[in-house]
Picture 1 (cartoon, rainbow, N blue to C red):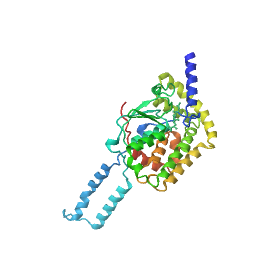
Picture 2: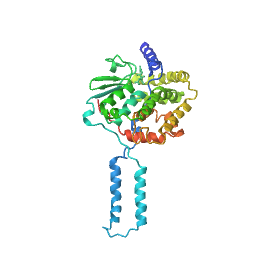
Picture 3: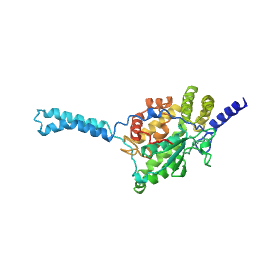
Picture 4: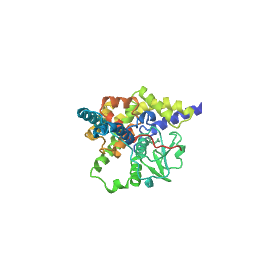
Length: 337
Ligand SMILES: N[C@@H](CCC(=O)N[C@@H](CS)C(=O)NCC(=O)O)C(=O)O
């Protein structure tokens, strides 16, 4: 009995205490929906466009006169335009693996599966195809990171060196694997930096009030957290209900702290602000995602298939960019620990 009440109060206090901004009390055990649903079809690869081209090539060959078949030039032209239109409409998005000699040998991510900051780091690792192992941290005991003085996640161990703070992790890893990017530092770098800051200072604060907006959404979120997190059997049930109830109230305080009156309106506004920033480009980085694209995608990934994420895609114009990002980031480069 005593143990149960101790556990319940520990769960509640831990849920309340988990924070993501400089140690203040905010929501932390954030949520990530089924990975499998997130990794959309990655069939639009270079190979598939090559296959498409090969499929059309006999038609093109027949124009060279070799076949002796009578094909009207008008029909041929129409077919050719069709082929070109098809290849333009199905853009090819792919990962950008760095040269193998720059890829760290041993990368371990200490994380909560649903944490937006951890997902930001994962989006980076997945897009640059860096193999990594995952250690899921128990948010109550944190025993998996008891070796560390820093008690938040993500912590990324890169060849034995622990890196902390999601944006710093990405910067430091970026220096290692993308030296050319830092040497050639493009003039539009400020844009990328400013939007990465917008993610850390604005976008992340809108997420909790949305995913814990009412009891049913808070339960949906905690159902996801407890199914994917590192919890014992007993912790699972208590965390789901105690966590959902407490985060429902915490999210009301967060709304006040960040001056949010209507959380959905704030989410939609943020999504449209991002789409406006794209300004007609496929990605903020142009034809390929940059670190700001990866940051926005990373923090949205845990909520995309929750009620709030579905609403966001339905009520704003962010869906097409999001799908392009899913295709570009592709499958996870996570390996078994
Ligand atoms: N600024 C940090 C924030 C990290 C953070 O707040 N992580 C949360 C999880 S989403 C955390 O570990 N909170 C402390 C806790 O769970 O006790 C970053 O960008 O990595």
